[in-house]
Image (cartoon, rainbow, N blue to C red):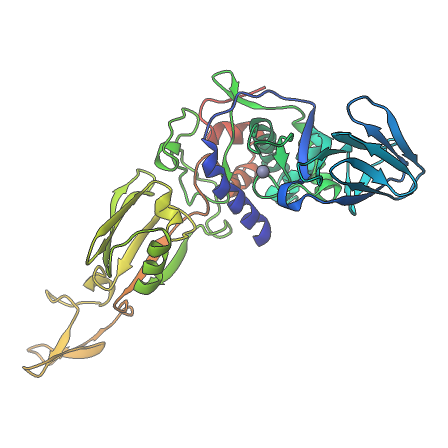
Length: 434
Ligand SMILES: [Zn+2]
């Protein structure tokens, strides 16, 4: 489970660069998924299928080779040709397709896929490996990587719509390549048939072709693991304004179970300085951190690192990412900011911290007794440990960017009888499902 949630988190992080809310695409029956390309482009690849395979010139449809059931075909690519020893030699072709026969799946480099494989020549003669796959088969596979198949069906269905909208909206995310989505966390993790489960197929089929629209257009649906009680308006995270990405209450996350519903991270002054330096900020020695703007949902929208030579302010999502935090919703405590009330129980009008003095020097006392005029003795005890100097304790809630659907919230809603339409319409204000 942890790995699944982590995968979501990574996907969510990368989504930042996309330009939230922009999408003009429409549903298509087939998607082209980039399996290997660029620095991972292979010079050869082995294929086979239980039903046999046929290799075609993908432009003219001419048959280049037919392989029997379970016959392996190792296809080599160089700058001038595609070929397979003793089987075929095809010179001057830009792209060929490798198609399984008799309704079977195809094994490509040991991984099984539905649909077929398209090979396209890269400039250096190596090949881009694409899987041309039915959109719904693709959704059933990626769904199990974004949310555990053991979760309630209605939550899985909501996630299936998110995955479908995502795939349709991804568009030109890989410039110079002829595919819609890649198969890694950069887009959505896709492992062909290995990613499918009976439950993910069921949720996909139950929402077949369903896309969410806002203002009549298909829009990207963002999600993350846990909101910590309230989601965030996109303008406070990515800076853009979208009517369907507003902050909403998230009352169904289970605080006991939801991933990082509450969290605490301790960072030293040196660790924070190293992170700032990595971000290019030169402030000298860190003196203090101020949280300058807090959103109504409790997320930090602006913060400043005060140093002895300079100050450095960050806004929106950078308040989370600069320190590598689980979410943008947090408070910071340090030795300087720690209140006396959090350290000591007090009696009468006295308030801590308490010191024992010899007249020349004060000593911080953790436990001591006081005696009143009637001889009654009261013991004063320290409640918590003082935060050491140059240490910052960051207490937060939620896991991920907080825009759109909380997966743990969706699970909670499903467990409380809501269906996937209720769930999506709760997290995405004013959307329609069609
Ligand atoms: Zn990608």
